[in-house]
Length: 141
Image 1 (cartoon, rainbow, N blue to C red):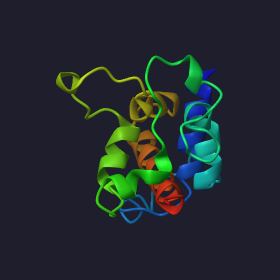
Image 2 (tube, rainbow, N blue to C red; image 1 turned 120 degrees about the vertical axis):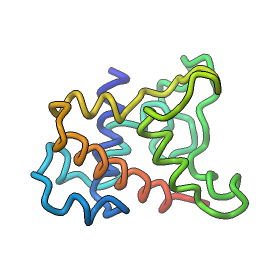
Image 3 (cartoon, rainbow, N blue to C red; image 1 turned 90 degrees about the horizontal axis):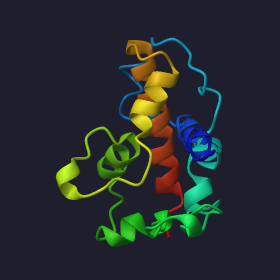
């Protein structure tokens, strides 16, 4: 259930163009291409982070960690939205175990495998991640 919700959030964020958009302009259409960033967020992230990104989703109370408020990422980073750090956190494949346990799903891997694990799948993962990052940028307070 949590995996499906997280995949949905990723799909919602994929609709916004990001730094990978030009490189993937010729990539085949993916399963989540019609989703907006908000729709992807609702599908993949809201179960933990809440519909508004405040960290108060229905699953949050059952987790052993505090779910972060995603509306204050820019404020916590000196006023600048940390887009690349957010992109890496969503993808999850470049987070190193030395930095502690990862409680969030490794969406990059999950989505890539679900989409076939090939180059087209990786292009879709990048589009989804871009949409999610841009959506999160749009909800900053």
